[in-house]
Length: 85
Image (cartoon, rainbow, N blue to C red; front, side, top):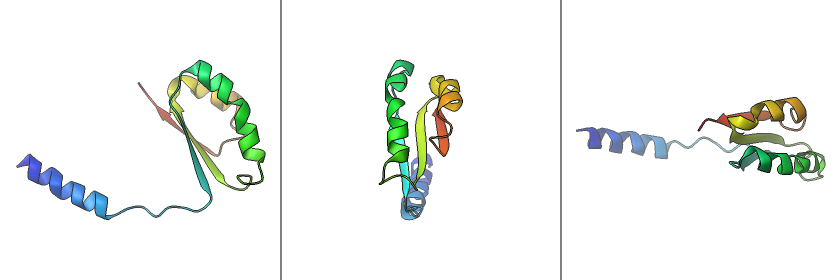
């Protein structure tokens, strides 16, 4: 019974894809906090680059980097999405 229900839900979920918004960039970094410290130097380069200057930038990463990112990089990223382990 549940297998049939999941199959129906999967069909509806896969059949209705959200439209892709133009000029959006998703940065996915699931590294540890030390790797974020090394990577964050590139956020300014990405934000100020000719290609991505006017784009919506979203950062997806571990919540362990949250306070650091919000304190120092909030002006470089438009939206943050946090993952918990």
